[in-house]
Length: 235
Image (tube, rainbow, N blue to C red; front, side, top):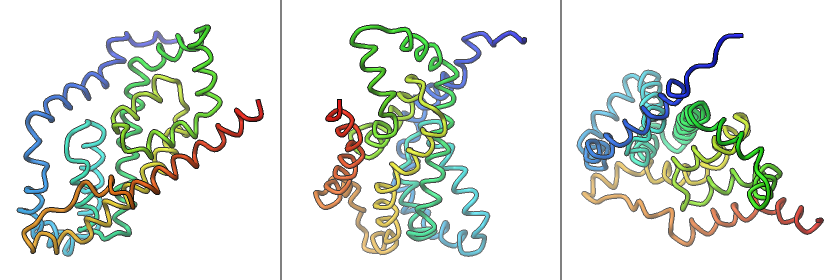
């Protein structure tokens, strides 16, 4: 049986992601911004009109890299997906790329530290063991709520499941489903971005926290918790 790689080697992908994320937060904040999108939107629209398939493939790759490396600009990419490709299939490109990027972060975290942390949780006792058992019994509601509630940072929602030993297929499926509502809202905003740019204004990126949008998202999160409440009542 081949020897397992040294822990440092296994942690290198996650360390690289954290390092790139730190550098990107300092250097790319102005590059991946709405102003940059405003300056280049005509060229991007022309590119999408002339080379649709190539633009779509390139867009998904760039969006995936931004999420996988935790770089700033994911929201701008979501808006760009809306005005380049429309609400549909733009929302599928956005959600698909974000899910792939999240899975890459999840795999890097699980390879680096997740397995050791999950192993320690498996041998835990007392209150920590009860918390572990509760999460394992309600994995899907727990994952969905983390994605649906805007208060949970996307990067954190990629790391925590890896440290808790969540299965990859459940992580990927709940990520896709859980980010779909918010992504649909921003893709819809992006689909009207051309008119916003022509008026010389900026889109309302706080739309997710408007009561008419936040209310349904919180309702979906509450709905995801229904199985947890039912199990508790039965016990």
